[in-house]
Length: 101
Image 1 (tube, rainbow, N blue to C red):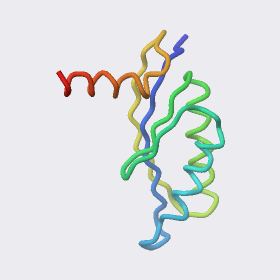
Image 2 (image 1 turned 180 degrees about the horizontal axis):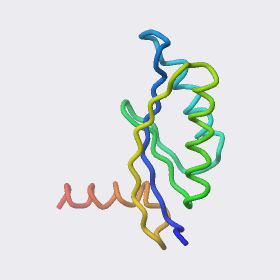
Image 3 (image 1 turned 30 degrees about the horizontal axis):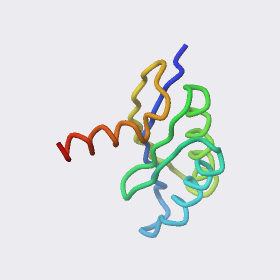
């Protein structure tokens, strides 16, 4: 069973015009309300947890956008690493250590 998973994803509503910030905010709200460790930047939202938790959050985020848009695009990249926790911050900390050394 996969315990450690980090997934970066992007949800884009299609067929709603150019202003999509409100739709994206609805998806990010689902992620933040999940209680799972997460981070949002200009391109992706990243969330960490076990497979079932992460995929459920992504599905609910897509559903939140799909409730308002006729079509939804989802881009998903996942790092599956059993036994790893706090990878969302520890991976970045490792890079920072290398940059300082």
